[in-house]
Structure formats: C-alpha cells, structure tokens
Length: 195
Image 1 (cartoon, rainbow, N blue to C red):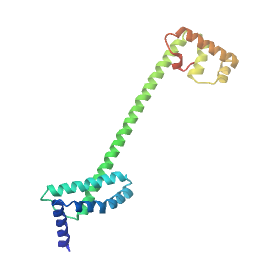
Image 2 (cartoon, helix red, strand yellow):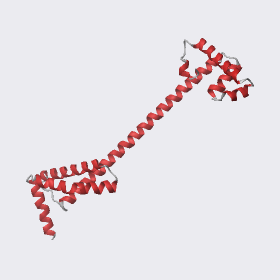
Image 3 (cartoon, one colour):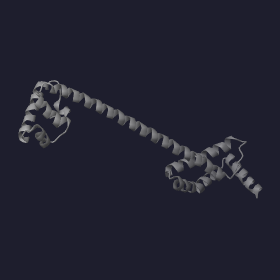
Image 4 (cartoon, rainbow, N blue to C red):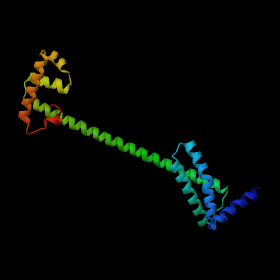
C-alpha cells in the first residue's frame, strides 16, 4: 500500500515536471472549492483571500516541482498544496490584520492631532476674546462670560444678574455691537461664535 502511494506521488511529480497542465488544472478544479469551503467556514476569511492563497499555492508547488529535481513529496500532492495554501492564507490574514491595525493607529493619531489643533485654536480664541472683554465694564463682561463661556440660558443669566430677560438680551446685543465696532478690522466675529 505504501509503495502504491509513493509511486502515485512520484507519478504526479513526473507529470508536473513533464509540463502536464491537465494535472495542474485537475488539482486546481478538484480541490479549490474544498479548500475555500474549509477555510472560509472555519477561519471566517474572505472567499477571495482563500482563492488567492490556493492559486498561489498551486503555482508555487508547480514551480517548486519543476525547478527542484531533488524535491520529494512525503505526502499526497493535494495534502502538500493544502498545507502551502493554508500557510499562504494565514500570511494574507496576518498581513490584512497588520494593515488594519496600522490604519486604525494612523486614524487615532490623526484624530488626536485634530483634537489638539482644536483645543489650541479654542484656547487662542478664548484668550483673544478675554482680552477684548477687558474694555467692557464688569457687568457687561459678566454677561458675556455667563452666556458664551459658561453657556447659560438667558433666564439663568437674568436670575444671576437680577435683570429682566428682555433687557438682558438687548444689552447683550449692544455689547456685541460695541465689540464689533472696536475690533471689526482685526477679527471675524462669525469665527468666534459670538454673533
């Protein structure tokens, strides 16, 4: 029995070396679907990756057999191709995971940089506005700070400042108009989010 298997393996190697494309196509057609089914189901990989790994394994095996005259099959040709294909599929999956991890790391770095840029930009704007507010009276400055820095509602500010809400809204508009007149040529008020 063992000698029959050895002779069959050697016959297949001889046919490969002789350039028998039919054997190659037979092996490819006969075992491709089994390989794809086995690894797509068990490894949850993509069909294209399994097909690619199997195709490369058949091609690599063919090249190895015809270029290495000392090559000896210790198992069936199909088993050998399955092992090579499995290893290629593992490498494909590892490569995709590394690439995905790199992309995720890059996206995290980009998000961190954007976040830092936003923080720096917001800090700059806040400092600039705080410097602008120095020209205002303490009461006017307090109204602007409560509304635009602490983000309080008009009703809450009216309660804190002990002012009528309608009067407070009109006063806020006058304060903003004053600031705009003074600083109009130096800053875009729309960018500050005050207008």
